[in-house]
Amino acid sequence: MKFLVDAQLPKRLARLLQNQGYDAIHTQDLSQGNATPDADINSLSLEEERIVITKDADFVQSFLLQQKPYKLLLVATGGMVQVRVTL
Image 1 (spheres, rainbow, N blue to C red):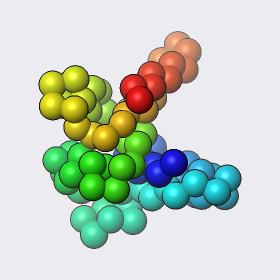
Image 2: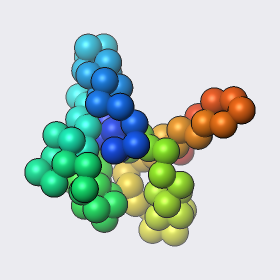
Image 3: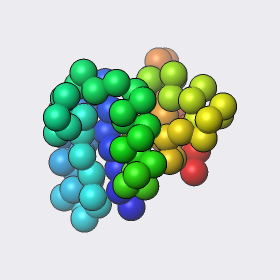
Protein backbone atom coordinates (compact mmCIF):
# COMPACT_ATOMS: atom_id res chain seq x y z
CA MET A 1 0.00 0.00 0.00
CA LYS A 2 1.09 3.55 -0.73
CA PHE A 3 0.07 6.55 1.34
CA LEU A 4 0.17 10.33 1.05
CA VAL A 5 -0.22 12.09 4.41
CA ASP A 6 -1.78 15.55 4.13
CA ALA A 7 -0.49 18.75 5.77
CA GLN A 8 -2.83 18.78 8.80
CA LEU A 9 -1.35 15.53 10.06
CA PRO A 10 2.16 15.17 11.47
CA LYS A 11 5.06 14.14 9.28
CA ARG A 12 5.87 11.47 11.86
CA LEU A 13 2.75 9.59 10.72
CA ALA A 14 4.35 9.12 7.30
CA ARG A 15 7.59 8.03 8.99
CA LEU A 16 5.70 5.57 11.19
CA LEU A 17 4.09 4.04 8.10
CA GLN A 18 7.50 3.86 6.41
CA ASN A 19 8.94 2.09 9.45
CA GLN A 20 6.15 -0.47 9.11
CA GLY A 21 7.22 -1.15 5.52
CA TYR A 22 4.72 1.03 3.66
CA ASP A 23 5.50 3.48 0.88
CA ALA A 24 4.43 6.72 2.55
CA ILE A 25 5.13 10.38 1.87
CA HIS A 26 4.01 13.58 3.55
CA THR A 27 3.02 16.74 1.71
CA GLN A 28 6.17 18.34 3.16
CA ASP A 29 8.11 15.91 0.94
CA LEU A 30 6.49 17.35 -2.21
CA SER A 31 8.01 20.21 -4.21
CA GLN A 32 5.38 22.70 -2.93
CA GLY A 33 5.45 21.26 0.57
CA ASN A 34 2.40 21.83 2.73
CA ALA A 35 1.19 24.47 0.25
CA THR A 36 0.52 21.76 -2.35
CA PRO A 37 -3.01 22.35 -3.75
CA ASP A 38 -5.63 19.66 -3.22
CA ALA A 39 -5.89 19.19 -6.99
CA ASP A 40 -2.18 18.29 -7.15
CA ILE A 41 -2.56 15.91 -4.21
CA ASN A 42 -5.48 14.25 -6.01
CA SER A 43 -3.49 13.94 -9.24
CA LEU A 44 -0.49 12.41 -7.49
CA SER A 45 -2.77 10.05 -5.60
CA LEU A 46 -4.32 8.83 -8.86
CA GLU A 47 -1.00 8.60 -10.73
CA GLU A 48 0.75 6.63 -7.99
CA GLU A 49 -2.33 4.89 -6.53
CA ARG A 50 -1.73 6.45 -3.12
CA ILE A 51 -4.27 6.52 -0.30
CA VAL A 52 -4.63 10.09 0.97
CA ILE A 53 -4.73 10.35 4.76
CA THR A 54 -6.23 13.69 5.78
CA LYS A 55 -8.36 15.67 8.20
CA ASP A 56 -9.58 17.90 5.33
CA ALA A 57 -13.27 17.16 4.69
CA ASP A 58 -12.98 18.81 1.24
CA PHE A 59 -11.44 15.57 0.01
CA VAL A 60 -14.68 13.73 0.85
CA GLN A 61 -16.63 15.94 -1.58
CA SER A 62 -13.99 15.46 -4.25
CA PHE A 63 -13.98 11.71 -3.73
CA LEU A 64 -17.76 11.36 -3.82
CA LEU A 65 -18.27 13.64 -6.82
CA GLN A 66 -15.16 12.99 -8.92
CA GLN A 67 -13.62 9.79 -7.54
CA LYS A 68 -10.50 11.78 -6.60
CA PRO A 69 -8.25 10.97 -4.78
CA TYR A 70 -7.51 7.34 -5.58
CA LYS A 71 -8.54 6.24 -2.05
CA LEU A 72 -9.27 8.27 1.06
CA LEU A 73 -8.75 7.84 4.78
CA LEU A 74 -10.38 10.73 6.64
CA VAL A 75 -9.32 11.29 10.24
CA ALA A 76 -11.77 13.31 12.34
CA THR A 77 -11.14 14.35 15.93
CA GLY A 78 -13.39 15.83 18.53
CA GLY A 79 -14.80 14.33 21.68
CA MET A 80 -13.63 11.02 20.30
CA VAL A 81 -11.42 9.91 17.46
CA GLN A 82 -13.19 8.74 14.33
CA VAL A 83 -11.57 7.27 11.26
CA ARG A 84 -13.49 7.00 8.02
CA VAL A 85 -11.97 4.79 5.38
CA THR A 86 -13.21 4.97 1.81
CA LEU A 87 -11.48 2.27 -0.21
